[in-house]
Length: 327
Image (cartoon, rainbow, N blue to C red):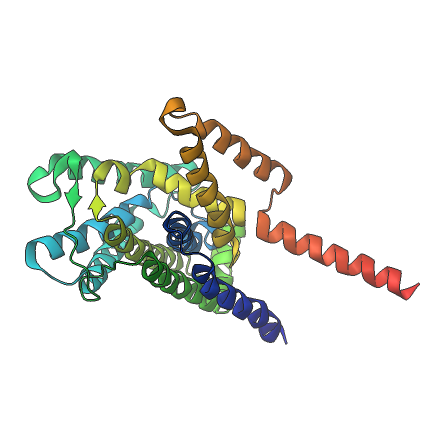
């Protein structure tokens, strides 16, 4: 019964998401839709390690950048299809996550967070100074050769549906994790790591598994970003700002929830885009003030995130309605 009750709303959400790109032909709004799907997928990937496992990473831009640069370099240098380069980048990110995770996953709280920040910063510095490979601070410009094999399309609507595919794939993996022993173990580790270890849960192995899966899907989104914008630069691809964005989307939407990251992306992405366009260069950086104020308000009045607070409000409404009907 629980599975049926969960699948109904989730299937309905998939149908709604599939219809969204058909609601407009305006490139400006279509770009927002593409970004919502893209960042929603990245935030969902971050949620695996940050929301379910409770490992607060602020260095996930490292895996995003690895995915973006690996596929772009393989395409530019060898003409290898980004679809293949995407998998190579995902594998490289997973390997990198396994190595770095093994060294840092024993750290807890802010110490783990600082270690992940250091990881992304080191990669950003390497990418900036390794000019012969990465293009340095100027980055790489991916030549536009539209075709399915080249992962480039002339229509933004096509990008929207490809981005939706990545988002749904990530959501499907999270759904499987939620309904498996792995998901229950990860939540146990998040809530009380020592107690979980005492009960026989293999804490280190499960933390590494969460980081590897999260890194792999974050890397795939990095490739999608590179093929959509056709430009990759280290100051952005490996930036702390990007990692914080992933985390904020999940926190606002709801940590450790299936739909929370998507809700966070659906709020933050249009807000960010509209404020930048509205304020423009005349008030450079001022949009961040409005952006921050809205985030603070959401966190203050919806502390458990939009997904959880909405669910609780709905349950309270059903309870009150049932009591009134029984009188």
